[in-house]
Each structure stands twice: as structure tokens, then as C-alpha cells.
Image (tube, rainbow, N blue to C red; front, side):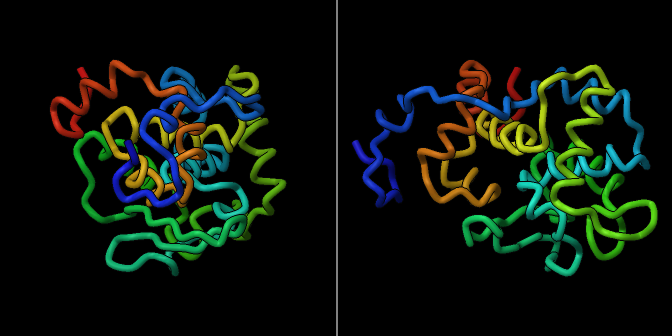
Length: 205
């Protein structure tokens, strides 16, 4: 059985049975996300980087350069550096209730002008510096082995657990391959996914 709207030859059975692969960037858990937020306050550089990357689901190479110039009618739309694919993320546009808290924290933490992520000196951060900032800040918060890329996965998992389809998740994260999305959302809670489906993309119980 082919996945609707997919022309890359991936079936539903194949999509949900992708083989496990090595995971150098583990997905952040809900508890780790809460722990980081409790340790780093809004206004800190670490929290700014964290909230921007977690909300937008971007790679560091893109997170370092996206900003308000790419927002139109409340929607961030940009071409990814790595793949050339387009990602579309709500910034100030209305979102479902279960996304409102994360969106609010993103808006509180993001720089209000130009780039979303800027240093206290008003300059952008390099990709390497941004990656190191998140990893080092996680360690300081007592969260070991977590990276910025793991936040990208966490966003995909969150959407999967609220019954977003692979194609919908791909529109946000910029993924065009169902195989990649399956890899990113492998850690999604299956019970949460089923509960979300039953109530139509609402908060799992």
C-alpha cells in the first residue's frame, strides 16, 4: 500500500518499519527540554538558541541565518542550506492550542530584529559557535549527550505525537523523504500518536 501523495516508492509498511541506525544526535525528551528551560532563563544566549532551534526545527546552519526578513504574513519560509529544500514554519501565525506555549517561548526568546539568534553584542553566531553553545549549555544544565540537532528531532517527534502526517512534518522541517522523517520520529510515543489521532491533532491525554 503506497503512502498517499508520495511518489518515491515508499509504502506504509516500509515507512513504519525502517531499520534502526546509529544515533549520534539523540532526541531530547520532554523532561530534558523542561530541565533546560528551568536552568537557562529567557534573556540568556543559551535559551535564545535553544528556543529558536526547537521551535523552527532547523539545523544550525540555517538557524544561524534565519530571521524576520524571511517572515511574511506570520510564516517563516526559507531555503535550507544543506538540501535546497524549502521549510515553512509558523512564527506569529495562529497555531493549534498544543503548540501555543512553545510558540510563545520562541517569541519571548528570539531576537526581535534581524536574525532570530544574535549575541549580546548584536552580532550573529557562526554555525560552529551555535552548535557548541547548545551542547555546552545542555551539559551545564546537567543534560548529557544532547545536541542542537537533537532539538530538530524533538520538534518532529512532537508533531508526530500530535498526529501530523509525514508530509505535514516535512513541510515544517524541510524533509522531502519519508525515510528521513521516519528516522527522526522513531522516538515518538506510539500511545500519544494514537490518542492524538483519535481527537484530531489535539493534546494527547
